[in-house]
Image (tube, rainbow, N blue to C red):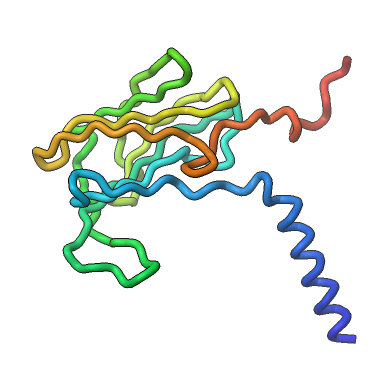
Length: 164
């Protein structure tokens, strides 16, 4: 009896994962910059990200330690604070762009965020530029299946449907 219950629960969990998989958030994009001196992690604050919903940029910056990570592990380092004064950000969609003022994220050293409402489904680009400890930075990150989530239409998930 226990085996039947275990198989049933396992099957239910697997079915739920398969249903939710298309809506699962992609990992934020992680990139070493400035000759591998810094690591940035960037993406939308909320993933999956939907058109018309409050969202925004989340950016984490750390100084990569000189220690070599073990195979399969990420390099770790100290969070870089105070970048709201030296870095700028913008979001780009098609031929439009908008400045995104960076603010430190609450209780997360080295993390910054900026809110906006993405209004169209599709790929968005975040551009980060300025300086980190006197090092010039100008990097662009575009949402995609290989990076972080693109903005999705929320229509398939809306309920109840509007009257025709």
